[in-house]
Length: 376
Ligand code: SF4
Ligand code: SF4
Image: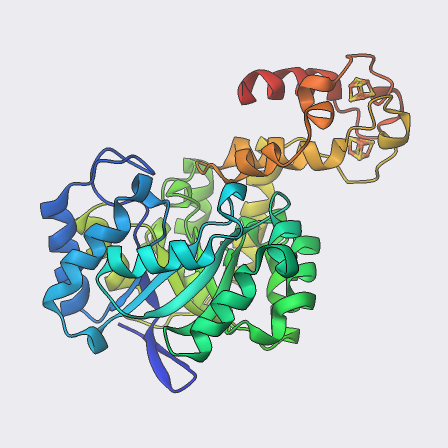
């Protein structure tokens, strides 16, 4: 396993994400305990001693299982990360109650890493309203008294959300998790997020390195282009090597669902093989092709917005529509829920005033209708 230096620690370049454990699937409550135990043991035997769980993973079943399975190892031999679930607004103001329960569920008396979970459009105002909720102050205090070793955030919101969060709390953030992979480098502005974090001197932890597994099984026409460059390289290896080429990245978290996947990823992350310039460019060209094949080509010019009688944030809604088409996660759905009902796709009047001014000739009204049905 490769290691990266972080504040005097040697962190494994690969961490075990605990939201896609073996069982009934992503976010489902039932976890296959025997296979999960084999995976944890294999991790510990092979240098992957970073485990990233959260209050909500597997409907609350990830934390207690991971905590129990790690009991057989000395506390100082592994790093455990969990998160404050402020993506659910009803949890705001409950940091103390939830944090205490999490320590109990995980059978530990401190977390090595603790994060504000899923900072996005939905909760940014709440996260920043420390006077009202006090969650930030409480967690900062836990860091000061040693019950949190490193405080961070996982951010799914756009660059503006990240900016606001960092302006308020950046000086206290030891690390930040973002969705980063070769498709999202441009598509989800991950490049701009990495650059912004660099300004704050905050290292990057990666979520969704293979976009929920989608980049491990890309279309044959794209895979052929990569095979032409390196005939023996697997698709997951291309995804991980892309991340190895970004110096700000310290830990790549992968939500692995089987021992075979874990072994493959450990094997890849045991060799440092950054991309050549040609390889980097080809991967970006493929990412652009993938995005344009699947996404509506909105340029964000906002001409449509001024003509919409409902004042819908059309380019943002298109972004979310594209995101949902390209992802397996629930995060874009959560972000959509941050919109009030009169700003949802279902509020569209089908008047097509927007389409008359769209230089890209996007069928906006159809998209709104399809999106509203999908969200329902
Ligand atoms: S079709 Fe919908 S999105 Fe377009 S201008 Fe009319 S109400 Fe707004
Ligand atoms: S006018 Fe068209 S391209 Fe411009 S923001 Fe609206 S939907 Fe996007």
